[in-house]
Length: 346
Image 1 (cartoon, rainbow, N blue to C red):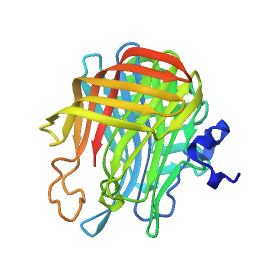
Image 2: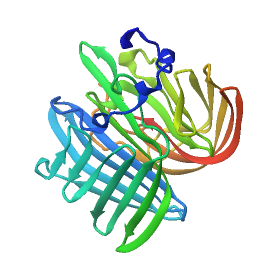
Image 3: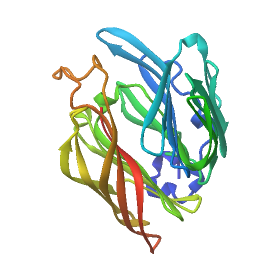
């Protein structure tokens, strides 16, 4: 059977289809005029510090003018939840990115590697990190190369590979010149596309659930008007270090909405995910504990023709108590945990 004739369920007959080649985590958008691409890393440490970092390239048409953005967005959260952030822009002349594997250099900063080990080195204004991410589960891509095509004429695509669904992270943070040694659990993925996210998506929920023997990564959302507001959702399930299921048979049921005054986004205080695949079946319930932070879209960001304000658009990040009640390969997986997850309305 040819690869293009297989359904997602049939791909699971050969799990090797989902493994990443090192080029899957290299730069993809090398020629398109309007694009975005980023490499994302985060980690939560056993001393209750955490970090998140985005290494981003984008070229967006704004008010009939092409606007480029090349930056590193790096944040550290201390045990009280206080956030310290650096957003460092770069000129094209200061950037070098490999077409063969993950190797992104911006100024003196660099993130690089291939499964199972990646390294990050960043420093700006006394804030930074030297960290090593080591895979605890296999990397993941949707076959054949992680790219989903929504239209061929015009060409509209979006790519997503998860090089490190769950990783051991060790090294040090630098905060106000102070060196803090850290050990914990992290995540790394890579996204690229050639259209503005607010043109492609109405919204999505995204999160990762780390249990003692299982890892779940989900995205539950809805496409935009150009795609008739169709649902688009996926859940990847790992048992031990292996992918055991990739399914679109997941729906989200949000409830108890309140409005975030910073962004104007209405977000749920409860989110129930219902999974009904042949391998994974059951519910994951999120009960909001607190809103960690919110990100409004920047003023002047190009929206649809009938919108004039960015209020009601952006992202919110939650900390929630989570109740997992699943059957995985016929075995009960019941666990109470806590997690950070996000709601994005671009």
